[in-house]
Image (cartoon, rainbow over all chains, first blue to last red; front, side, top):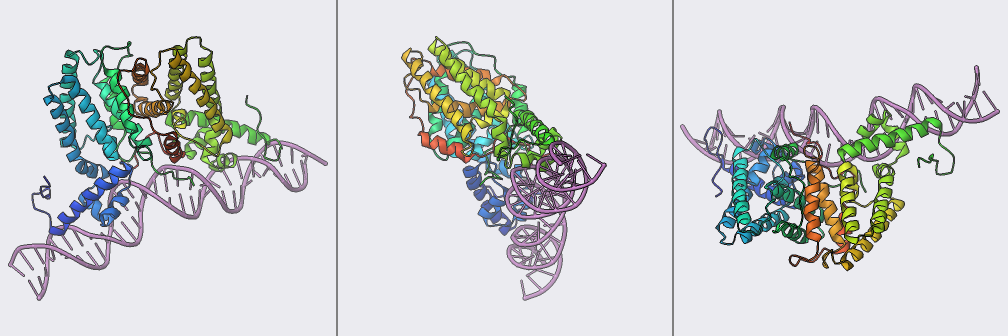
Length: 229
Length: 229
DNA sequence: TATCAATCGGAACGCCCTATCCGTTTTCGG
DNA sequence: CCGAAAACGGATAGGGCGTTCCGATTGATA
């Protein structure tokens, strides 16, 4: 990848502009990965060694930077579901996929946040999310047919798991980085067939989508306390 | 309750001061319950119909207001564990307690946040938290002895559940308020004996305590987006 | 009713955030 | 190598936050 970026009218960037663009994305990868999407644009500019105006010239809004930075993570997301579908063991593919994306959340706090939001303006970005989701639906079907996944498992349960794991990762990631493994293992065991009991109905897809919309960038990932000390 | 407040030197408050104190606590209950601890002090003052300075005279720091507002919720927390211990069915007591406190999280976003933080300055407050935790340890022991709770369940798993459920409640509470019920039901089923598989070790208590310290007030509960729109 | 301390409330402080303005510097084609 | 276009970056705007200051007001007392 790393295809050189261009202006909207097709002209290539000047050499210094292209260099800075790369630095900014690399810096944002580091900062968002460590601090979550709550990290400030100024901290990204500092890490990149560029002025704040340069950052905003390349990415007019924070959302644009986020979409650019996590494009390759979304690719990895799609790849992960593809590999899970290639697995000859439906249950192993299903659980392996869940563990893989939760590991991605643990490895990158920014991506953990990204997975629980939508960025309607970034269409290619959202298209990949939808693609992965379609693949996951197929994973569900196969895992149910194999008899290993409980029949009342709903696709919405993946969103719940991602939300919950984002919370666990943001909470414990710094002091007990592996906590998510135990948490995810527990949930996966509850997904296993046969069901140990009935479940309340899952939420409507629309409701979850609205909830994902509500949180634009700059929300999550428990920030530093403002007043504290 | 509602014992009239007094000055540090024992004098009673002037009538208007006492009236305002009550209004502030009632307003904070409303605002924190609806918006989480991320709600601003100014919004509490507005809801109470008092000036911002009046709020800070009664509660010198946000943490003090939080401790005052949620004192009765902490009492309810302790009461809930006591009632669970009175249950003749160890597993029913255990699961009932978990459902009860998760319901409290869903009913009050502020309390959902409170359960995942510590306020070392508010000693009586933290003493109640410790009291409830001790009771929960006894609930665990009994539920394991009855053979209904998996042997490798750890007390730390309660913290993980509270963190995860706080995330679910904050995420879906507005658009799909009952989502937490399904999520909690799933986790409870994974707690049930016999274990369906091994689990990674739980985090150290110290690590979780540090994580709870890290988040002072004014962190959580996905705020309104600053730049957005 | 007069007095004075207790209490009130809005303006202001200091810090952080996203985003923009504009004078300065750098790149690159002729 | 020079000049115009492109890109740079620090200062600034505009808003939100927790918290503090201080002149105006109000409740209790005599």
